[in-house]
Figure: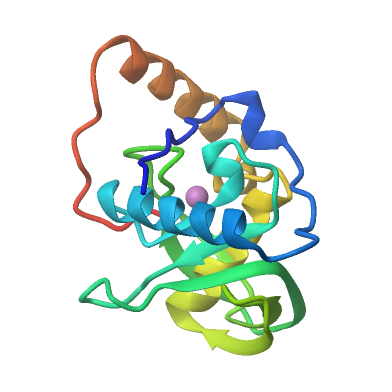
Length: 176
Ligand code: NI
């Protein structure tokens, strides 16, 4: 397994739109393993392939306390979204920044698993937020896009400042 580099906002490569995976083969499974190692090391609870500069529609999530329930979603599609809730989101590509974002509170997602088998999940709470946040990444979108222009500008300045200085302090909150 290998640790991958995570792109940091406002890197323009975070705007790439990921392409569907044609075939789930060993190379895709290897990529999922590398993404998992990268996500756990960060540490984070979700990671999209876009964030490691790979333009394939793959995301992984593990919201379990013991970090032993990895879920991989290949070619994920939201087929239904209902309700509304607000959650304080963070992102491994925007280290140290957290903001309250409103999204549908429940989402049904169809995808392929690590073996290439289709499945469907209806998620609510944190999992629903994570899935929508990660699918946004695959579409070239970052959670700060939902904030006002002024806030986005402040975050860009903060990122530039931190890149000049050093690694941001590890946050106590979870980043996706
Ligand atoms: Ni993110």
